[in-house]
Amino acid sequence: MNKLLQNPKSTSSLGFILLPIILILLCTLANIFAPATLQFPKPLGIFQDLLQSFTEQNVLSALGNTLFALFKAMCLSLFFGVLIGLFLGLNKNIWNLSQPTIDFFRSIPVTFLIPAVALLIGVTSANIVWILATYPCLLIMIFNVRAGISKQEPERVHSFYIISGSPNIFQRFFKVTFYEILPDIFSGFRIALSYCIVIITVLEYMRLGNKTGIGGLINDELQNLNYVRVYALTFIIGILGFVLNKAIEIVQQKFAHWAVNLD
Image (cartoon, rainbow, N blue to C red; front, side, top):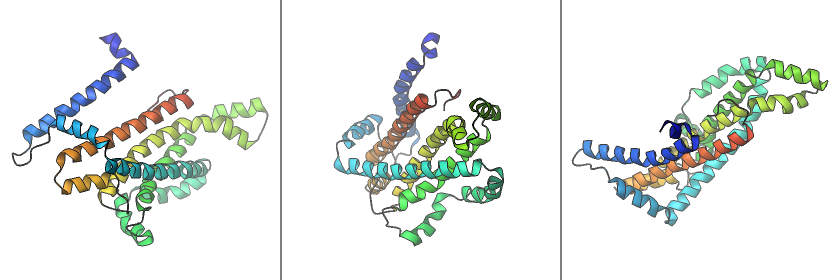
């Protein structure tokens, strides 16, 4: 048993078996302690509806809208987060000057920015969901990139400068600094991805924008008292997050394999 648990592939396989068991136990416990007037759907019914939902056009269309908003928010967060993080991290004076402003905006929940963004582009704009989701994800990327720069080893940078004999700052960045901060970029991206999924689905649930995503579909089914479909769609969000995080983890292990501790 110990040898089985020490094998990463074996424990990962056991995790796939353990997940549905935990979900079934949670559903059973919820059904036991729920009031008589509000019975929790049976686990088998939820899983059957989950499989059926993947064959329905409205669910696939909503999932596509959610993924498209997620893609745009994460691409912008990654691009501008890395650029701004590098700009702030490579100059301590600029970082010290801008840190109070960044900390101020980091403390504001994204939901409180809805009125301001709605006034600028309209509450029914197709872009409002991914624009709002970009805001916190961008801050996460900035802080992770800046943290990676701040903890890079000066000795390694100095050694490259001596060995190469070149004072070129771009060579020093692309051959040393970039590889130093790459694990932090991946870590920040994975954290931002999880936040982005939550924020986008919540905003969709609030019926922002003119497209129906998974969150909006959950709202519709809840209004129709279709609780089985509500939990089936909720599980889809969980599956989406798991698959995307696993994909990023695989890419991280390939391109940042030298990192000692991978998330």
